[in-house]
Image (cartoon, rainbow, N blue to C red; front, top):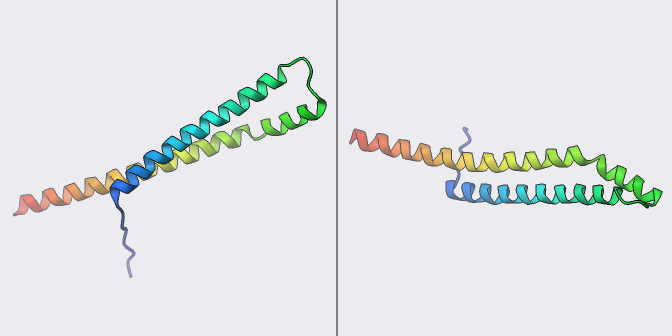
Length: 100
């Protein structure tokens, strides 16, 4: 039995925009974390244990930026899917009107 795709395009677009906002907020927070980390490392005195913690945090920088991209890509997928459904509906409606 063929599977059918059921989508509410307006919900897809709305959720996609909300996810995009979250991706931007996530990116801002990641950027703040690493700016704070750099400020901390630039101080004259820093406990050696803190340097170890900073190195561990630094080791995750690339992964966090990749996560930001994945979240943004999913947001784009949702909004694009919503727009595609709307376009398909409009195309079908236009074809029906032309034939009548």
